[in-house]
Amino acid sequence: MALQYIYISPVGVEKIDNIAYVLDELEKIFLLPFKLGKFLECPVSAFDPIRNQYYANIIIQTLMDNFPSDGLKLVGITNVDLCTPILTYVFGEAQLDGRVAIISIHRLNQNFYKLPDDKELLSERVKKTLIHELGHCFGLVHCDDPRCAMFLADSIFTLDYKKCSFCLKCAEFFRQQVLQST
Amino acid sequence: MVKSKILIVDDEEIMRCSLSDWLKEDGYDAIAVESGYKALELLKSENFDLAIVDLKMPEIDGIEVLKRINESNFKIPVVIITAYATIDSAVVAMKEGAADYIVKPFNPEEISIVIKKLIEHQKLIKENIRLRKELTKRFKFQDLVGKSPEMLKVFEMVKTVAPTKSTILIRGESGTGKELIARAIHELSPRKNGPFIPVACGAMPESLLEAELFGYEKGAFTGAISQYKGRIEIADKGTLFLDEIGDISPKTQVDLLRFIQEREFKRLGGKELLKVDIRIIAATNKNLEEMVKNGTFRDDLYYRLNVITIELPPLRKRKQDLPILIEHFLDKYRLETGKQVETISTKAMELLMEYDWPGNVRELENVIEHSVVICNTKEITIEDLPASIARKALIQTSLKSMMSLEDIEKEHILNILNANAWNIKRCAEILKINRLTLYKKIKEYDLKKP
Image (cartoon, rainbow over all chains, first blue to last red; front, side, top):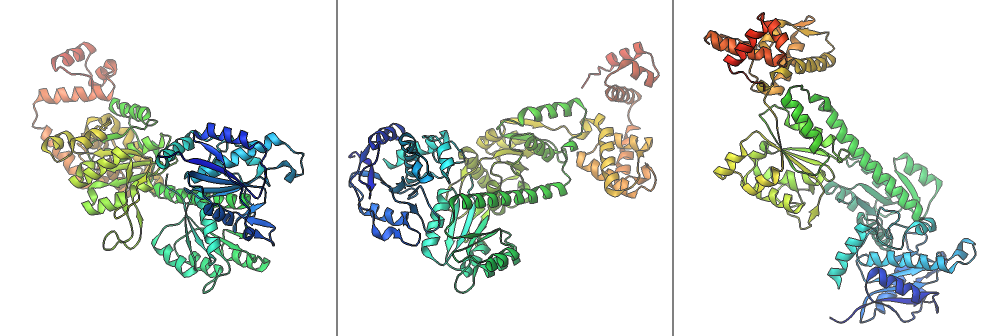
């Protein structure tokens, strides 16, 4: 079977800080090959002028349309503010047990909270959000352990409290899921 | 783990999908329908823990759905959601009994707290209902009464095995308190906050027992008009007590064995493989070894169940427990009836001590209840005892009249010794013989401590 990659693609953003480092770190956690994907435009149809936000579910559709032939999963990273029809904002959105997810650095950035830039902290938050959404793509649901990457981050505080790794229970479930899907 | 089930009612497809996807990511089992009618219909056949209902919908609106749910016996909390929030509609929703009123789109923090809180509350309500049912059965851990070495050994065993995960087989005659022991094990185990689900296996025919144990899906058989969760599923995180296990059919033995081995099962007519985390305690008054030999009980199931065995002695073999058991039941029925019955006459006590108690502790409890109800004084006399007991005891006594003097002496000395924990000095005083004579009699009749 040909090697399949987990692609991380910039969506509507030219440059993502520290992305090479983040990919390296993710490879260590997931033990699967990661690759930087091609740049994708953020679909205009995803924009809601009333909410001044972008619908994550519409961007996910665009990612599906651009899914690479040698891809195992595809996660987009954007800098626009994401929302869903039902939630005021999301850090990311994924297809549960699916192939595609999107995360936004908009609310991960300290600037959003009127605080000075912190690139290291931003990389950590990006990593945690990527792990979380990829976890959903592998069928993992929210975890009760507030330190687990699969814990629901409903605010930046809960996100910062999480670790960049799965708890033992989620790690085992993830291992089983990977065995099935690869 | 069995997932909490949430019903979403919203006429907008995008909202249904978005909310149901989010709830699924949060580990819930979410089912979405587009109208109030469909929701009410679904609620008749499926159990939900929570409903999230949109306010503005064609045909019947969210308030009407809320009213009908509250008028029915579904008894689930309803959260009203709307993109068009007004103070008036919020007031109406809360007046009609909505659990909460939330504006769409939701703040992730707010909605996750609301749902978690309601699901936890719903779990507490279910637990409360279960506990109330337990209370009505007058369950008390203290109901385990006994000071005989046999019972003290049983209590020690219960304390030792309760914290473990091991399957337990309780053996004993009918009425010896097997279910009380099982409940005590559950209450002393780390699963005490989970449910204790008893199943009287002998009371049901094969097909009914299978449905009761494993549950069934709607349409699994004629009459299965809605999905039914079996006792195994309900017992998740708790203890399943299989009483009269020796009475189950060969087919149920196979199904039960498979479940015990795999710890997973399917509802009858279902495809989904369900996993539960339960501890099994089985009980029987049958000779399972004999049944295994005869081929009426599977040996593999026998070995799976017989990991730890607790033997409950019959009451006739622990007669020294009779006085404290009688006292315990007197207290219980004195409280229950409000009667001032304080004691039991010596003659009535002698009669009760003579009786063989084939129905064991259960029979004793019934006798004491009967006597307290009948008694019009502060003391229970022979006249207050059920006629059947008085008669049987008298027959037993008259049979004794045909025993030889030697046998009567032997039995009487042994009874006195056992009742006084083999305190030779005290026994000799009661028997009005000297200690050396008593030692001689013990040797002569080859009497042994129990």
